[in-house]
Image: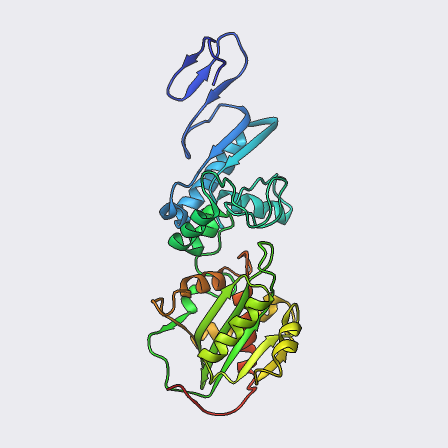
Amino acid sequence: MPPRGSKYTRSTNLIEIPNRKGSFRSTGIGGSITGMGCEILGIDDPLKDRQEANSITIRDRIWDWYTSTAYTRLSPGGGVLVTLTRWHEDDLAGRLLNAMKQGDGDQWTVINYPAIAEKDEPHRKIGEALHPERYPLEMLEKIRINVGSYDWNALYQQHPAPVGGSIIKREWLQQYEILPKVFDKIIQSWDFTFTDSASSDNVAGTVWGKVGARFYLIDCVCAKMDFVSSIRAFQRMSEKHPKAIRKIIEDKANGPAIISALRNKISGIVPFTPQGSKEARAFAVSPLFEAGNVYIPKQDAEHPWVRDYIDELVSFPSAPHDDRVDSTTQALNYLATGMGTGLISFI
């Protein structure tokens, strides 16, 4: 706005100060600005809601307007400021950043303010709220649960994931209400990264059963834990699922410490060394999902963790955490290779 007390002319879309250079002109996305130039092109929230974000027609229309109309109005040496909520990985910002990565687009400076810091920043540590006086961490955690990981990661953390999924597609997932009574094998699979500090990854443990060519996720725990909490979680899971005789623990990170502490107390602990990168391991088991052979429980009071589990799975490798994914790929790789024998009744 012009300085207080200055004279200016104003219309519905134009502000000018007489006898001064410069003006401010506004228009909507798709509006006509042909014949007008600018030194600063500001674009604010080109997508207004989830419905628009999920429409490829609207995303294409915004992109066409930006490239063929808005961008062509920029004067030499001018700049573009895009302020937006990241509703979709293929939104305007997503396309601009992808063009930059491909080497054929403009170079952008990205300023991102996630609701909860995902790394140490100049004015806050990882895990701290952006504006704790207005939105304390406890409130943000409640919001995260209410809106779900998919919208949380997009709207509050600004890194949206593909709707269908990245490596593992959402539509590939099968869901069950009743488990088979007999399994060929039942195992636990654990990914241990403990310190319970805000900067640590989560500890994740899953229980899986295999019947023929089908794999069933039976239980899951995922939280930040220190060494003692990790031990207790492992013991509780073993007591809850005594027929999960084999307990597969990734033999990296903090896994060896858990193995050393419990090997003589709990039977069936098997160190497992994963091969390849996290992405390679996910790609290796993706055919099992695509074939419809992996079954996840339906979200209910007994399985309140299902939504977060699925969101992390289909967001990988873009999600901020991948511990449940690591536990899952480890279990499926182990079961799919035919390791272990025996018929187990689940009664």
